[in-house]
Structure formats: structure tokens, C-alpha cells
Length: 413
Picture 1 (cartoon, rainbow, N blue to C red):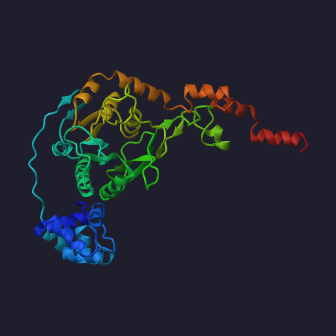
Picture 2 (cartoon, rainbow, N blue to C red):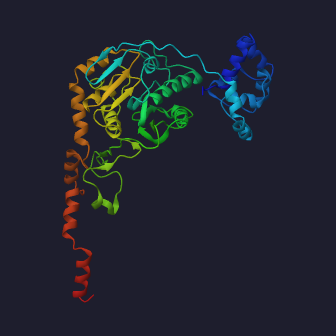
Picture 3 (cartoon, helix red, strand yellow):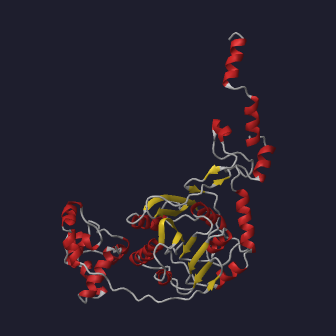
């Protein structure tokens, strides 16, 4: 289902009736409706009550017709809709199918293929049910400047319809039991999750802490990105539990969360990863970045890939960016397919010279599956905080319940 705003309906109607934009705005101005009020409808699929009569009049449509055009079936019509579903289906005809032509990869190695093409063009060439995981970090439509061919300043409807198009193709190529991850700002995650929920099974919504973010006027301070995940089918084929170190104060070494009497039950291999990731840091230093634009960290992709796939599985990333997904995938012995509209030479050189990524992944792996890193352990010992070793030793020194009861009897208590 394509996404339409009320503004789209107005523009489409004006085109069909050969009405210019100036004439359309003049029509509403005569009804004391400002141009800015109409332009604000570019972000809305609902008609504000103060505009409803004028919009209905201009479109010459009923409320029901507008609701259907916007992809909604009002509650009081739903029974009738489903009773007549066969008749409605008979009135519809499919769109013309596009001719699918093969495309040649820009770069390939033993693990994967990289295409310097539009992701939808490449997706159309891939077989259904052929990849184990999809990871997508698309442009956020915030008006940022990227390489030639990337438009990051679309209308709401254009952005969402484009998003739904590549998402539907990603769902098609995903194997049953496979998982899709999409990284975006909450504004778009809401729409994406709603669209995916019509086809797949919700798995999780992960909040990735946004470091060094700036406040936005008239809004709450943005503090996280969304990483939403859905499963094709009802159960994921793979889930490899990830354990990470306990978060501690970098100054004194004390734990940031009070574990109270559960210290002795803490797993020395670390704490389970939750759906809030506050240990992922942005790649900002020029020595760590592979391009001038934003890029995701090796740590983030290691966690997603390690958690959701096994060696030999196939991963598809439609927005290659700097190539982090592909670099981590092949270091973890996964196969990959990728596309990128921008500069693919950066990705190629990164994959040909993985030394920097190998060092970063080694550091990430050294921190995993330990309750405390070596540095954290030394700091905690220095400042007298408990460690797994000290808690275990204290427990061994304590008599068990049976021994306590016997001691009480013998002491006459």
C-alpha cells in the first residue's frame, strides 16, 4: 500500500483538473486558509477539523472516499468491506511488471558481491528466499549531503513510498525464519514498523543511545536511534545470545546499576544484552572513519550479525555506505550481497585492506563474554568494589543453611 498525504490528494486532483498551484492556493485563501496550512498537509494523512469542509469541497470527495484514498477503512465500513472483498478484488488490475535486466558487480570476492547500483534495481534480480538476514541503514531524509545520486530531501510521501518499495523487496528475498533489521530515527521507524507488521512477525525495537546529539527546538531532546527487527514467519532460525560487560563508572569503577543481593548470581561471562544499547559509540574520529559522511561502528554490526546469523549465512545490505556491514560480515565468515549508489571505491579498498577493521573487531571481541574488562577489573580492585572472584570466595567461606541450623542447635539457640 502506497503512502499518501492529504497534500498528495490535493496536488493529484489539481493536475487532473488542470488547476495550477496558484489557483489551488487562491481557492483556499478565499476560505481564510493560508498557504502554509495547506503545505503542512505534506506531513499528514489526516485532515485537521478546521480544514475538513474546504478540503472535501475542493476534492469533490466524501469522507469515505478520502479515507480509502489514504489507505484507511473506517471502522463502520469494515464488515461491508470484507463481505465484498471478492468484488473489490475483481475491480483491481495489477500494475505492469518492469523488465528485469542483469547487473554486473562493481567488486566481488570469496564472501560477497558489491553493486554500484540503485538497491531496488539489484533487488529485482535476486531470487526469493535467498538471504538469511537483511540489515539496512538508509538515508534519514534529513536534507544531508551525500554522494551524487542520493536525494536526502524528499517529501514525506515520496520518502515513505520509496522506503516501502525497497522493504517489500527485502522481505521477498528473506528466507523463512530470517530476520530484517532497519536502523533509522524514531519518526520513520514508526511508519516502517507499521508496514513490516503487515507482512512479518515483530521481534524487537532496540534503542541505540545517541551520543553527542543536539537539542531540537520545540521537541524533546533526541537521545536514541531505532533499530527495529522483524522475523519472516513466527520463529527466527538463529539467536545467539550476546553477553557484554557490566557498565561501570569510568572514574571509580563502581557499577552504574545496583544489583543488590544478586552479585553472587552475576554470570562471569557478562550480562545479557537488553533492548537499550548504550555502549555503541559513533564513529567520529578521522582515524576511525572510512568516509566523510556518517558511518556505523564495527561494534554495532558485530552484535547484530553475531546475534542473528551463523558462519556461512548470507547477509544483504542495500545501503553500503562505508561498507561496515560487509567488512564485519566477512571477518565473521558470513557471505554478503551489497549495493551502494555513492562511492564504492571506498568500500572496495576497505575490504581489500581490512587491517584496521580486524584490530577494531579484536577489541570488540575481547570485551565480549566478560563481566568486567581487564581495565575495569583493575579499577574495581583498586577502589575496593566486589568482583566475581571476591563474591565467590566470600560465598565459599559462608556456611550453608544446614550448617547454620546445626550450629544454632549446638549453641543452644
